[in-house]
Length: 233
Ligand SMILES: NC(=O)c1ccc[n+]([C@@H]2O[C@H](COP(=O)([O-])OP(=O)(O)OC[C@H]3O[C@@H](n4cnc5c(N)ncnc54)[C@H](OP(=O)(O)O)[C@@H]3O)[C@@H](O)[C@H]2O)c1
Image: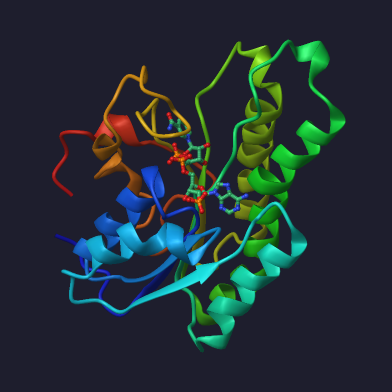
């Protein structure tokens, strides 16, 4: 099993769902973890789950819907004097299901703020230092959602995430800061709902593939976690 011993990862939205699985998968590989959610109380479950691994665990809180919340996450990491090696941009929201014509500008803005603008702010905060140190893995969680106009703010924000990831990969070419997208598949979480195709645990080990890439490996690519379901990595 490839080890991430001594590395530090921030996983946004790791209080539950897919982010929680990613945090556990990384801790199993000896990676130090920074857990994130909107409030400390939301993090207790994940912190308990991580306590059995022999890794350092910190937490940061912040609502990514606000600039103040985004800054609180960045400050939380930086005041811990941690050099971030892995940024797992996982947190996202889905707009309320409604006819596409009735979706308000406010709903578009809120979804883009959490799903895209906060992600960009976090990349801006941490990627330059990764570049300086010659190592970084940034994973932006996307979605395979299509033909669902009622969720257009969500799906369009994910299309923007895909494009942004490719642009950032071009910016970070030949720096060993690898930036890739991860599509988890349709999973039973609070966001995915109970009718989803797969259990949340099936996101592992595939979600870890873009973290475990060899130095100067692929960047600007899409990894589909479900394709690695039965893999030993
Ligand atoms: N589930 C699926 O079927 C599916 C499919 C494709 C893509 N995805 C993507 O996978 C990622 C994780 O989804 P999930 O299903 O695990 O979602 P989830 O169960 O709803 O969990 C969402 C996580 O994001 C955090 N979060 C939500 N709003 C936030 C905000 N305003 N500020 C900061 N943190 C916030 C939550 O923290 P709190 O606990 O503090 O609220 C929680 O940790 C998302 O990017 C989603 O788009 C999911």
